[in-house]
Image 1 (tube, rainbow, N blue to C red):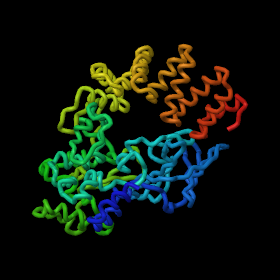
Image 2: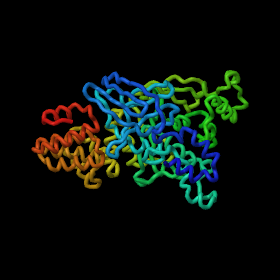
Image 3: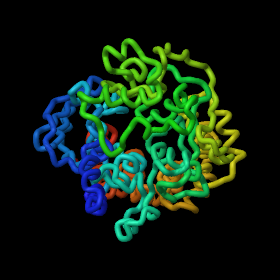
Amino acid sequence: MLLLLAAHLCAPCHAAIVERYQTTGMARSSGKLDFAIPPATVTDPASGAVYRIDKDRGMEFERGPVRGRRLLEWFVGSGNVGRSFLFSADGVLFQAPVSYYSAARKWDISPGYGGKRTIQLARAVEPGCLQCHASAAQPEGGVTCERCHGPGQEHARTAKPATIVQPAKLPAARRDAICAQCHLTGVARVAAATRQGATFRPGDLLSDHLAVFVWDTPEAGGFDATSHYERLAASRCKQASGDQLWCGSCHDSHREPAPAAKAAFYRERCQSCHAGKPCTKAAVTGDCASCHMPKGTSRGVDHVAFTDHAIPRRPRPAAPPVARRALRSFLPAPPGQRETALGYAVAAMTEPSLRRQAFELLLQAPRDVAVMAQLAQFHDRMGQEEQAMALCEQIVALEPGHPAAAVNLGIYKIKRGQTAAAIALWQAALERNPAMTGARMNLAVALWRGGQREPALAALRQLLRFEPDHEPAIRLLRELGGSP
């Protein structure tokens, strides 16, 4: 829908550009699944679950006696590398546990779903995913013209150049921010406290909205699906060229070369700087990128390889792993104390050596809901329930129904015999996200122990609507004499 609206707005004056753009990966990055997909059967070796995708876009699942079906309604991903699929329940979007990998031409378990013991159907889609894949927190329309050029209503009315953003004419930092908003991931991206809730608009500085942190030492192994921007910044080409080299130097966002023309298309761009340094091999093959921008594996995603934008002159050996790492800010604007603390808190989730430092930084940082939520988690892991509980109380007072704080506060309350308060907190959290399995299970148990059998049964049945393979809920439902 968004792409159609943008096309309707822009096409009267830019029909050829709009037509070309709609064939690009960005334009096809999400949308309604209204086309045929290849049927397949996928067996998860970890859980034994079987998934069958049929021609009507249905996904049947089976594990022992647990069986069901979900309609795959939307897709995310251009299909150049692969596609994931979404289904909905009670107004919430969920990612399907199977994806299609284009290069391998096969269906397989979705990234992050491997190694699970049961069918996984309750992974809600984060708004940030759709923010880049769909230009907004809805799964229709792909990336629109306005994502790079800004709001177009005034320009369509007046046709004045000053009423539309032309990225190539912006100062370098503002120009590059348009690409970096989606193609720069880093180790941690932290929303700036001063811009909470504000949406990035073309022409803004990215540092006014985000602090982005990367490791201060090279990482071993592959790279991430959206690490193009930081890899390019590490290249000798970028370091020698400065602001003259940017994403638009090689990529035309309005069109993509046909597969047979890609080598020549990108070779021409390489030669715009390197014409005086002929390469014998490239002269024969006509392909610079195969040597200098090789495909590499992506961390945590099977069947997928991405182009290395570090543009090595010769293949580089993998960097050896390091025992302890620190973060550095990727963007030139120095991050604030709060943003640094939150960046370390995010990094500490996968780097245990940083936990002590992250905790100390959080203690010193200005307090807001994000900082308090991270601090509460640290106190909880350290067994300091009173401190964690006090922080959760403060968070819920500021933001009633805050999912993590409300769920955890409910646990602390019920431990202290405050059952009614715990139930109210879990119900508030479930209003925000009805697929929170842990909260729903806690609610069912609390209702049952409080003598409310029918509400407990209803809570269990609702849980099993979202996660039909949840074994504790199935057992409790049977114990209470209920049926799904």
